[in-house]
Length: 380
Image 1: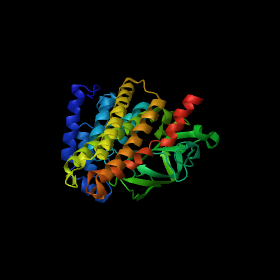
Image 2: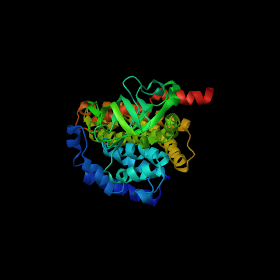
Image 3: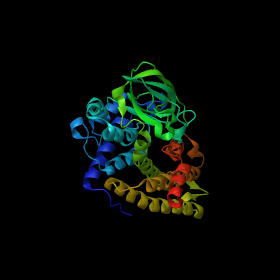
Image 4: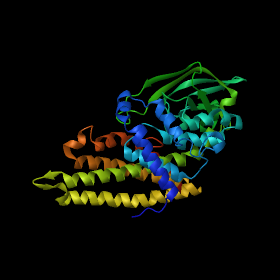
């Protein structure tokens, strides 16, 4: 089915992204995978190409365009290229809204120009060793010391954790406040007592630096409070729909790409003297995945348009995230199976897609959390 949500301007942007991937990412990606981290030069190149800060006002060096369809194009092309290590979506679509929506004018002048140029790489630190989706379990504390915050605690599984120059930390500022006693505290590179642990060894997305972070009596200036004191819960809930949409967009794009490369493979690969595609079982597998992708694509595209219009709610974003990522997981497993032994070889795109994509049903809120959000909305 012909997609109808993109204009000529969006497709021109798609060509820009593809050119960037061809010139600045794909030639270096294997080395980044071995190194466990991408180069800072890639971030600077993304800034020069206008791929950072798409929704940041032009006065700070951004694109000044809040149309989420541009972010969707970026997510789709990076997914199809198999290059999740350069986490532009995290930077633009997850952390960007906190800075543009909550920062003071002074904070915007201080942080946003570097955010858009690629000189300031960002991360958000929520997850702790003992607290994942349950914000009430967060133990990291920020104590009000009059002229500064005293930050203590640790975080784990932090994407961009090694490279980040600016970390938005979720910390407890009111001990008895539960989930509503949390604030967003921005910690900058070089702060005394701020230490990074090891670059975590993951089964996929090897070039995406994911780290442990430690805060030991870190003195954070009072002016680095982002948003309202004790307002983190509301701030986080406000921006989660966009985070989940970004993950959903990547999920359906991955499933479609897996279907594409597997369809090509079964046409070329022979068994018992004829192409695999001549076997009824293979045709049924392809037919099922193609139908699932087509139905899912229709829903996701509607969600993209609704989010661009500002009408997408948290429940439908949760539906999109759950369904698209679970489809991606099923497609990766089935497509690897159809590749046979070659599918288990690391040099085949389907193998990397299998390991890189497995995190999709976990981060941004697990599938189980998505179902809980949907269920509560229907049965409250």
